[in-house]
Each structure stands twice: as C-alpha cells, then as structure tokens.
Image 1 (cartoon, rainbow, N blue to C red):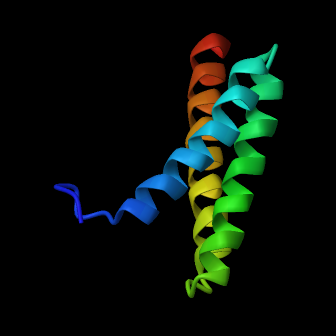
Image 2 (cartoon, helix red, strand yellow):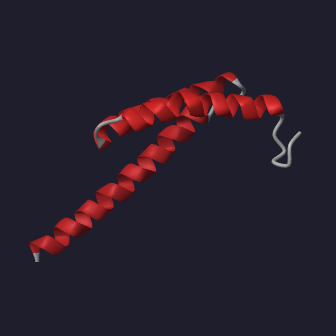
Length: 85
C-alpha cells in the first residue's frame, strides 16, 4: 500500500480511467459536448460502483444531478426576478 492507502492495482486502475477519460474530455469542442462526455463518465462510474457492491450508486448520481439542477433553476429564477423589476 502507498502513502495514500491505495494498492498499486487500485492506483493503476485509476490511471487507466484517467487515460481513458481525459482525452475524451480534452477533445470536446463545446461545453455541451463536454457535458455529454462527463455524463457518460458519471454513468460508467455509477455502473461500476453497482457491480462492485454499491447498489445505490446510480440513485446517488441521480440525487447529485437533481440537486445541481435545483440550484441552477433557483439561480435562474432569482436572476429573472431581478430583471423583471
């Protein structure tokens, strides 16, 4: 185990994931395309977590996304309210 508490195998898996996803993220030519890549990454991570014994992973991802949406919607509503005055 390393100083991070991670086995060499786990560190290698993380490096492999980074090597897979980083080029896809860097190749995105727009924010919308980047969102698609990151969403795919999040779904893959949740599916992997479920296979590895975390049955709630997809639900946790959904909750995180729902919270982000609610925050964006609130900010937008507040901004529109200020513009209406």
